[in-house]
Image (cartoon, rainbow, N blue to C red; front, top):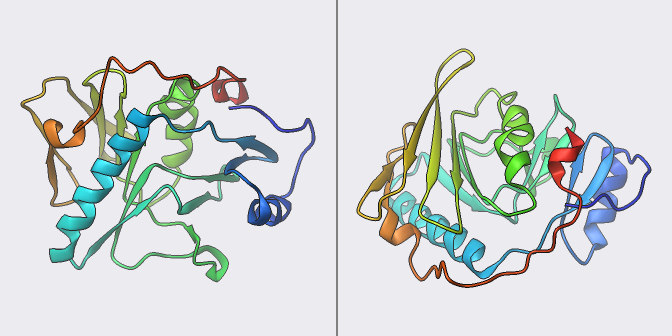
Length: 206
């Protein structure tokens, strides 16, 4: 991800600019960072996960899934982000009554990209952990079968489980939902060569 200008914006300025922007950007404590374009594999994985969640939650009134069009506000870190997939328990809580900004995620799923892997694992995960409702985090590799599942087990305590075999299934720890890795990686071509562009990495913002 690349910083647009070396100047600081207020959250209000960012939201105003985002209304008319041709592409989505995240906001990190005053800086506006354009999001890299998603690869075919990235879109397939995120789409597969969201579609399966959406279908499952037709019978689960207590949960709702959102895709990357929904913006998340992290007040303690002054960050606006667009998680690839978000799960809400109960009713979504909206920031300042804006229906495009939520503040109460329970599960967040990110598909790793070349330019954001370090930030997703470290800086972004640290920011997400400041959200009181946040309980579970999944990082999905798009270049091979590999998923890291972090589940909150107590105050400042998280457990990690990894998945790397096609015949496995991921069961969310905090939501009644399970998806097989075959369904998650459906139509994903690991031989596909994608060009994401290697701009300034978000990890340099930490």
